Image (cartoon, rainbow, N blue to C red; front, side, top):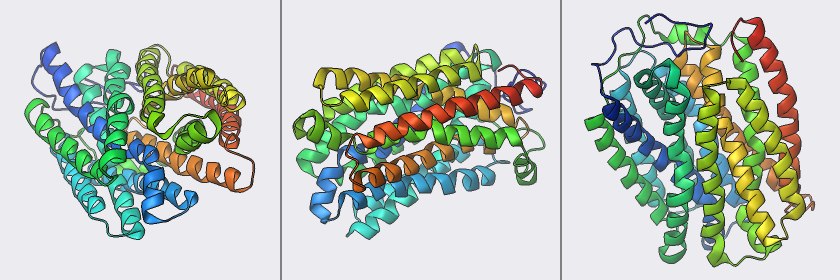
Length: 409
C-alpha cells in the first residue's frame, strides 16, 4: 500500500502480515492493549497510594509527588531513545523486549530499601512506556487499516483508561490493606501476562522499508511536529495537576474518607474509558476537530471542578467529565503526531507519550507549587483550566498549519 500523506494514513510496512480474520485482528489488538493496562496501573495507582508511601517513608507531600514526576521523566527520556533504537526492528519482538525492561524495573521498585531507590525504580519503570505504546499503536493501526486506525489506536490506549476503572482501584485497595509495595509485583505479573498474550496472538510486523535512525531524526525538522508536542503537553498538564493531588482534594476539601478513595479513582477512570472511545470515534472523522472540542471541554470542566470540589455529588460528576474530556485527547493527539511525520512514524508516535508524561511531570510540579504557595488544594485545577484555554489557541494554530500542508484537519 502506498503512503498517503494527504489523508494522514499511517505508513505500513512493505511486507504485510498474513491476511488476518477480523476476530484475529481484534484479539491481537486486545493483547497489545493489556500492556497499556499494566502501564496504566503503575502510572496512576501510585497517586492513590501516595498517602501510605509518604507516611511509611517519612517524606513530605512534595517528595511524594516526585514519585509521579520521576516516572514521567523516565517516559520523556525513554520514549524517543528506545523508539529510535526500534526504528528498524521487527515490531512484535521489540514490544516483547520493552515489556522485559518494564518487568525488571518493577521488581527493583518492589525491593527498594529507601525513598531514593524507589525514586530510581520509578524512573527506570517509565523508560519503556512510550516506546511500547508507539510500537503497539503502529502495529494496531496497520492491522486495522487506515479507515479504522483511530479506533484501533483507541483500543490500545483504552488499556490505560480501563486500568483506572478496575486495576487502579483494586491495586489501591490492596496497597492500603497489605502494603503499597505489592503494587509493583502485581504490575510485573500483568506485564508478564501481556508478554504471553502478544507472543501468541500478535503477528510479526516488519518496520517500513527504508526505516532508519537517520530518517527518523530528520523528522525532527518539522514545525507541525513540535507544535503538536507542545499542544499535547499543554492539553494533558491540567489533568495531572488534578489527578496527582486528587486524594488530598477528596479527603481534605470534599470530605470523603480514606476508605472511599478507590471509588473516587473509579469515577475518574470511568470517565477516561468513555473518553478514550469517544475520542477514537471522533478521530476517524476529524483529528484536530476532536482535539479542539476536547480541549475546550477540559478548560470548562476543570474550572467548575475547582469551584465546586466541596460538594460531594457535584465534585464526582465534574471529575467524571474531566476524565471524559481529557481522555478524548488521547487517540486524536496520538494520530495527529503520526500524521505530522509520516516518514518517521515510530519516533512521532513515541512523542505523544513523551508529551503526555512531560505533562504528568509538569502538572505534578505546578500543582505542588501552587499548594506550597498557600493557594490551596483547588489551585491546581484552576491552573489546569488556564492551560487548557491556552491549548485551544494552540490547536487553532495547528489546524492552520495542517491546512497549509494540504491535509484534513
